[in-house]
Length: 215
Image (cartoon, rainbow, N blue to C red; front, side, top):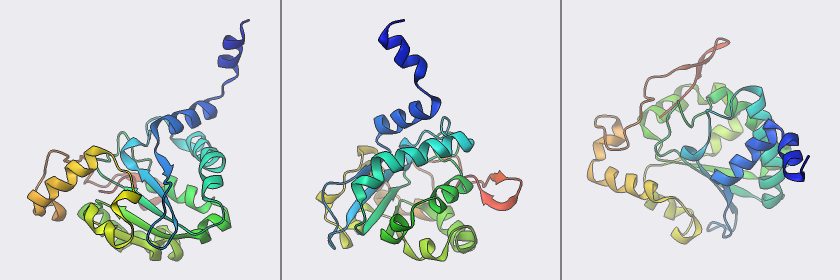
């Protein structure tokens, strides 16, 4: 058997998932820090392959990827998270609240303590309502207290310079659309990036409040 065939045969599903996450650049530690000198972990929700990374196997693959690739870059220094929710939909790229809670609870204590803020970009009305109602029950008080909503990219300027954060072009396009049609912020109007997940979906039978997707 050739070496390439042997390599293919020994590649586990978990390893394939880790390679996919690396290729898609869902998670990226920015080279430059924010205005307080903290490292920035940028997460693009639309890039997350939720169709592939699901269930216990998907959780394990994500944990392994974070431990191998992301946490070493962050180290023990304080950092912030910029999560970009633009164009996320439950079918393709939102794994579910229970999945995310499991990942957060499995983080090393040093990483959780070092995470000083989470900036939620383009949250939408449903996300705000969801976290206002169930956030304290589904996530620790520590994480909930670090959450900051950012409805426009320009408002990130309070915390970091524009050159400090790299986001895809579709995020800038959506930002411009929100400027032209501000009622979209309140769920009263739909735009080109209208998402099909405004209706809550159950994440598991165990918890009627664990929604599969938020907008």
